Image (tube, rainbow, N blue to C red):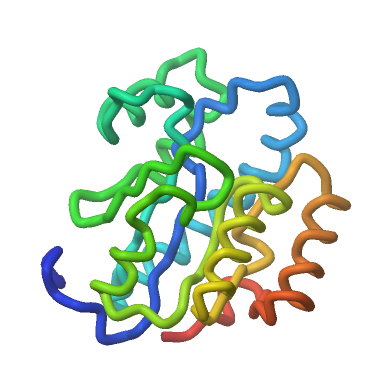
Length: 188
């Protein structure tokens, strides 16, 4: 297992966008329908990434809790009344995973993500998570603008509707030259 100071010689990182999420918003029920199968695919991809030595980076909204930390955020989202509880429990961060807090839609905006990726010697990001047409799209766009190779496995992202998801996937494939194959086809 690589320690936190060892560069990633595989050249890739797996980004999990907003999966530590209480899903406390009006459209959450619609999103959950697609997020449950997404979480299972991300879990499998994360296991494969860890086995291959690919670093896993949680890039998560802070939900306006500026004094929060990862452990507090996980505890909050695992509460019984949290709609996102099942997903959080399935995708719980491990001790050697990285965690970047983001204040807006993109994982790069006002965060240390780019610095971390450069430290890990990453040239490629595999972007997964919630929601395909918002935070996943904006993070993938900003990665592309920074000259990273972008992959967005179509089965590892979810939106409130299949139409929103499909449209965003097409946009990323066409405009960002993203690899949008299913997660099982990703090889390191």
